[in-house]
Amino acid sequence: MGREHLARLSRPRARTRTTARTRTRPAGSGRAAGAVLSVLTALSALLLLVLTAVPAGAGTDGFRGETARAVRAHERARARVDRLREEDAPDTEVRAAERRRKAVRAGLWDLLWATGRNSGDPVAVDASGRDGHCPFGDRSRPAGQRSPAWTAPIHHYWLSAGYAAKGSRWAHRHTGQDFAVDAGSPVYAVGSGTVQATTCGDGFGNQVVVRHRDGYFTQYAHLSRIDVRKGERVTAGRRIGLSGATGNVTGPHLHFEVRITPYVGSAVPPLPWLRRKDVRVGGASLDAVRRNYHCCRGR
Ligand SMILES: [Zn+2]
Image (cartoon, rainbow, N blue to C red; front, side, top):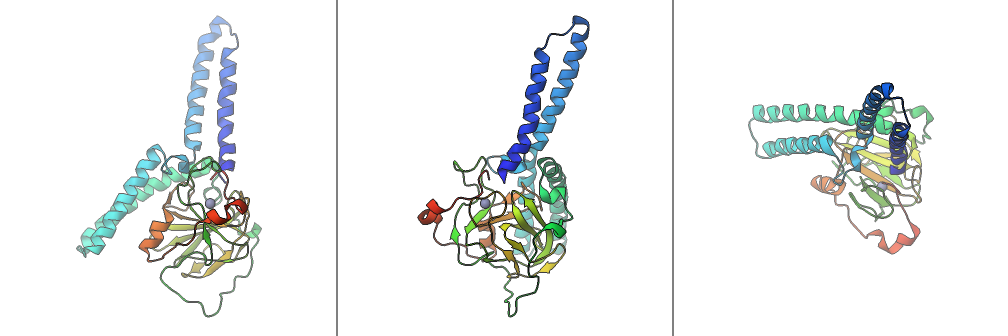
């Protein structure tokens, strides 16, 4: 997936080089000042373009600059709300903290909207979900399904690349948790919520983004089939699709992200988040089968 973002990123940089070459061309002395001025204007515009086009997930800690500060501010605001609730603080205090968190999140969303639009985030670019073009499968609800509060997104997996994993296979740190599974394994919503988006055709392949009541979003990518539609309500353990190898992958797996917003670049560490929901995700690492499996190059 990251490769696509890189490809998009390389364009403004290439244009910057072209502009630089233009500057070295001889120019008449009368026009020189004007030419230099317009080149400088163009360069600063391009610099702005490059800065805004950088995916927010490209930084060492997943975010950069202003976005990183906004994400930290939001996490602090959320931690404060959680703490007040745990301490059974007065309602007014909790509500005030929650209002503050929402205000911080609104600012963060604006940042991520801009970043997502410029980096081609499918969820930001096409919030409608384009579900007519995705390979949908069976939308019927499986019978006898349990409804735990929170659950793992997949059963019978190998844990492969983790959050912020760094390696020769990725240009940037990894923004989710990978579960290596055979294509066709059922993928479950980890908690109740509403399907925010279903998209296909980009580096994430067929993907589903679910909005949960606690304000977080979960993303399920590289699916072979999507079984839910945008706006549909889901419960924990509801099958939302089947695992696959669509998008920018070289092997079947589920790429799972927990995000502050629906957009690329707002991911938080998914396993600690699941642990806070009393969902234990563990098991063998993929070292044993690494030779047969590669994931998410560029991510
Ligand atoms: Zn991945």
